[in-house]
Amino acid sequence: MAAKRRLRWAALAWGALFLFWLPLEDVTPNAALGLAGGLCVWGAVGWTARRDVPPARWPWLGLVAGLALAPLAAGLLVFKSGLHSHGFPDFGPRQLLDLLAGMPAWGLGGALAGAGAWGIANRIKR
Image (spheres, rainbow, N blue to C red):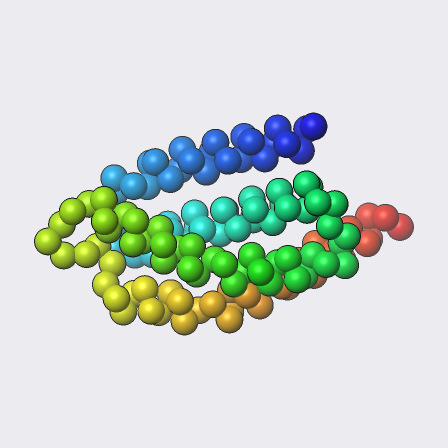
């Protein structure tokens, strides 16, 4: 019950940050990466809480969350560019392609984070 409440508060905080970020004139993908990372972590934690995923599978879940980060960030950037209605996009195609090119690194980072969480969970059990 407490985990669901924390996840709900985290979703509300993410939504507030998203609404704060939307009107800002920003030409770097850093904020979108942070928002997408928060969404991936929120999804992974929610998945483990709802489905009772064993810790041995956390590295795989981290890999999936890490691989989802770049497309989510690109989607956020496209969404924001569409809302601003400028004569030119806030984020160019090259920025989006560079963002998507980082998918393997984000996937590896997610897998390592999942492995680290697995190691911490095993250490706490002892």
